[in-house]
Image 1 (cartoon, rainbow, N blue to C red):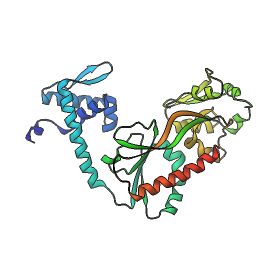
Image 2 (image 1 turned 180 degrees about the vertical axis):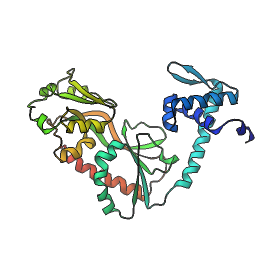
Image 3 (image 1 turned 90 degrees about the horizontal axis):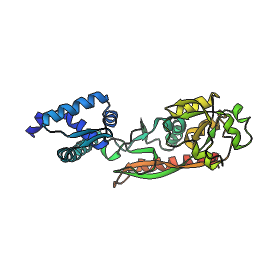
Image 4 (image 1 turned 90 degrees about the vertical axis):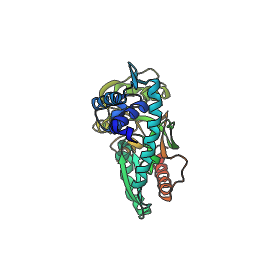
Length: 298
């Protein structure tokens, strides 16, 4: 292994991340550093290896022939290292580590955790709130919940809830609405990172092609929801996001029309491994709680 002394480990990590993810930005997000830092690590590693690993193209970083051979080995090696580290980080069966998106945690899950604790006092929950997809086989996370198409590599994805979207607004705004077309008179607060547009719901409501005046655009769904609660506009929300605010009367869903987005909430677990009892208990409890949410939208 003496040949590893000539190349910094951080440089190899940067090469592997860029090669696997396809861009400096994605690699920087995964490694928790700046884009400039990743770029410098790649340049230094290429110099130490005395090979060009990537061709710089307008659409991203493309591995050279020599780079492709190196990157395949690096990915295999770092996966083995990650699995070895995860083995030492594994907690006992009494601690369940879950990975969920911050918006799902804040707007739906935290309100219900006391009920899980009452049912399973033998299990302590540890929550990792992140939008980054994690592979439970390679870290100390036991189970994740993510929204998407369910087509993620190297993990087991199990559908929990098919996502449906619908307008929500303050009770004062809702008082002005009689039929779906009336919504066009309201300003909209837009989630700039949403995987869908208003056309999904407009089409279901018979208003295909219609648009709303945009009042605010946020890069976070929670901020959009808060703006809607404050009466600043109408938002296109989904079940788990709007559930608590609707129950509390902070928001109103003025129309019963729901539109499927083609995405869903999925359980993410390790592929090909037996699930521990704590994971099975958590999944069963989540499904039960989700059934209660769905009754609100029946």
